[in-house]
Image 1 (cartoon, rainbow, N blue to C red):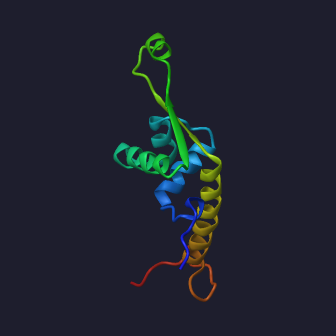
Image 2: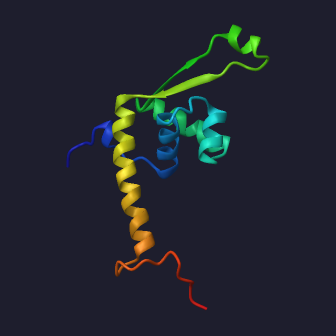
Image 3: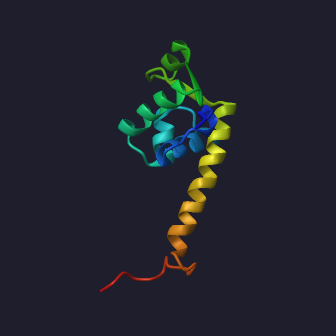
Length: 117
């Protein structure tokens, strides 16, 4: 059995949300938390794992910028090319999974159906 390249590595749904937020212009932790509705205890560990895999890269902003704006300095993240590839694969996988969940085994729309009484 061959090894998968990092871009083909399994990306969890929360990690896919973080990558999507980055791809859509959210570049620091609190922004990503707002965009994804994930807690800081979820977002920051995901960012560390994604960076370790080479799917994102980060850099600290200049302290003078943060000081001028009266806040702590931010660590800015950006998605890499490998991260874009992983996001595309995860998007496809989760779209298929969502469709199966909504359509059910017979291919019938189930999202409007009520559960058993």
